Length: 295
Image (spheres, rainbow, N blue to C red):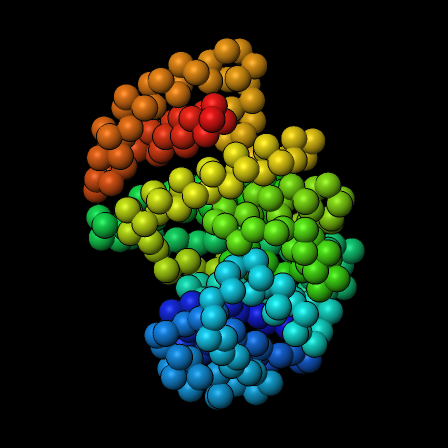
């Protein structure tokens, strides 16, 4: 028994629901689909129309934008079944047995199962090159590698989790900022949540432009800084934070901050180009984190 929950904000979910419906028609497990418009102003009618074609599906509209964390908590509380499959609006199942692979995990001893992300082989237009390249390099990772550090690559756009476990962990997050997957992973590690990764990817189609993504990168770094300052005893598998700790311990955080401030304009120009360098993006993140931590 599974509740498929899809938080949506100004995105057309027709392709996602059509792909799911094909698999739902042959699914023998009881299910429901809940699509939640979180203050959307676009695609509402299109999303309502496609949802109405699916058995056991409902389309919920919120006139206010509640944010990612609050919306997911609301969806979990609303869901009927004990297992929640969270899918972002901008994904599409890669495989025709996508749902069945998750159904096969319901009788296991795990609390959360992550399927992973997939990005198109062909590079997109240059305006989206940074997000695509980042996703291709750091998010499209095989389950074999992800299972070596189970709390590190926990992408919330495609994962199955026990309702009780999700409600307990998500309720501890009191900020709707960007970049909270790392915090969610750290809380799962703290709670000894049994996490397992499988190769059951969702194709991530909703790429941000380079400008938008770089802004989100900054927001995510700000979240890392905020969480570290508030919860210094929280163990994490976040690479950026661990690198920062090593640099600080060796007296290198201030030199990195100095270099970052003087090179930020050039770094930004390069990262927004058609051929962004991800090593420079990693330095950008480290330099920005060092700057935030010095305040």
